[in-house]
Length: 166
Image (cartoon, rainbow, N blue to C red):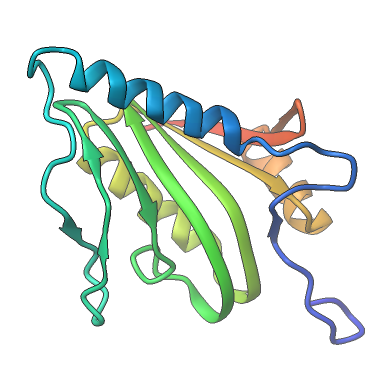
């Protein structure tokens, strides 16, 4: 929340002048699915739907192979506290690397770094040794903190940092 009482999103889908990055991820996911479907059963594509632990028992699509996974994350599973007005994020695990794509978090979030601890746990539960978090950071204070704590890098319109989970 800004000093004048207005709310500013922590993450934004894009900054002014940026292009959309979704096409590359969607194209990559489609390519992975096609490889799996054409692999003669080497992987397990389109496994059964998974429950996300939400009390509404909302079902989300999960595409999973032995070590590969791509799914949406929920604010609830990250333990986000405060008033979460909008939340869009996903996790992709490929081999030993988990990548979290944060498209939007909007609201007055309390203790946002507790969510990072939960992200580490989720990544480790899928066997990841490295956690990469990608977003377009709109909040300048948050950008500064992430830069100092995690050596945040800005590259091609995306901000990211990596954490070893070993």
